[in-house]
Image (tube, rainbow, N blue to C red; front, side):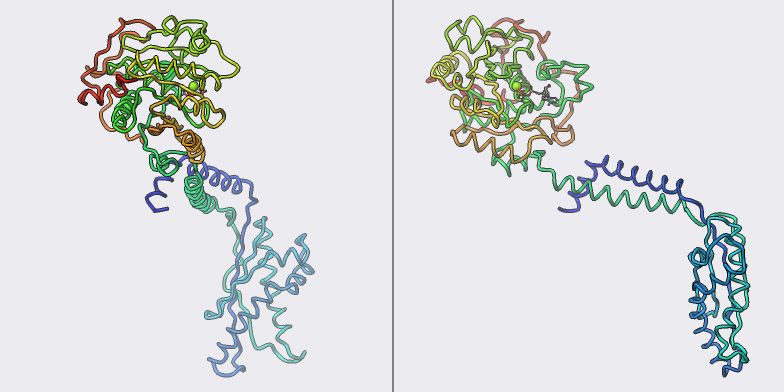
Length: 496
Ligand SMILES: Nc1ncnc2c1ncn2[C@@H]1O[C@H](COP(=O)(O)OP(=O)(O)OP(=O)(O)O)[C@@H](O)[C@H]1O
Ligand SMILES: [Mg+2]
């Protein structure tokens, strides 16, 4: 992973970094607040050797060695025992020893003793006891026989100091350490999350896992704007100036161009899993295609969880299944939606055997008839991985488009879905990344949201079966408007 990728991962997962820093700084503050304050009393001895140890230089060297040795004596149990025996501090010798530390400065022949205690007065008392007891103890230790004089002397040159403020805890230090630790941990977690994330997010992910092109990246509709706008996500008609509507038009254009290699009259829309946006994509694509002047039939081919008619506000009790079993005529149940050439066939009565119905000869014949009547037929289907309906419906299709949900569908799921479609030789046209954040969708230019450009004017009212049949000539802003006829009316093959 390169540095730029890491920086991107940190920027994207900034909330992880922020959360980790908040947690570690909070923990540092908690530790600081809960810690018992400790005080220090310091006293410093000057260590001198008497001249009978040799020359002045030799005496200095001798004293330096003694500084190191006395540091050991300072923290020894022997000194602590003497202090405990001679002073009533309420501590035993072990507790006293644990409070004393020594800092020898051999070069300066100085020896410092530091006493740390939760009680500032007792810290100083122990310091005073050290001042009194260390000298006699050293004399005792240095004496080779009872009569000889010790040849070193210890003189207190500072202390024992009276502690006024605690040396521990140190709030600034603790918070600083918490901050740095939080940053390091947060950055590692953010990068690790990026490395471990196996969901589809970019066209590169799509290409790597499916070898298919991305036809369009549809941005996520913000929940707030979803509440304000339509709950059904029919942005292509309701908010034609929005980045999402633009993305559906881009999908229309790319499908139009891919018609050079794929026929595009019957389009099956599917996805690996449930809830990835098949129905929303089918509806908006159908609206976008109808707005460009094509006669479009949107078929609710999801016979398990049909949502098209609900999204478009249509009556869906009778539809495709009733046509297939011969209960009704298709002309009686196909409903027009909006002022353009969009027609909708609801699912109808839910059957116990949806995949058999979709794969039946009756279905094949129905699709053939629809090819005669419509420029484009869009089939919304169930997800590919849990059920076989979409792979069966793909047999009727000229193009199959796979919807994957940004940050939700994993690359393995996308690969498996494509593999199961390839097994039946489905004519895969490409992938739609749905629900991408605005910044990653590569929305190119100038979206004055909510202000339709003259040529992308939305229907006056987004309502079912409003306008006159045959309405909806190609608009000037249709990205495909400048294409030659055969590219524009993709799939409108007279032989079909
Ligand atoms: N780009 C988007 N931004 C925000 N919400 C979206 C987007 N696309 C779809 N949704 C929402 O996600 C939910 C599922 O969408 P949709 O019904 O289209 O998925 P589906 O794949 O057809 O689901 P199912 O498998 O149940 O048929 C709906 O509430 C829809 O409004
Ligand atoms: Mg659906």
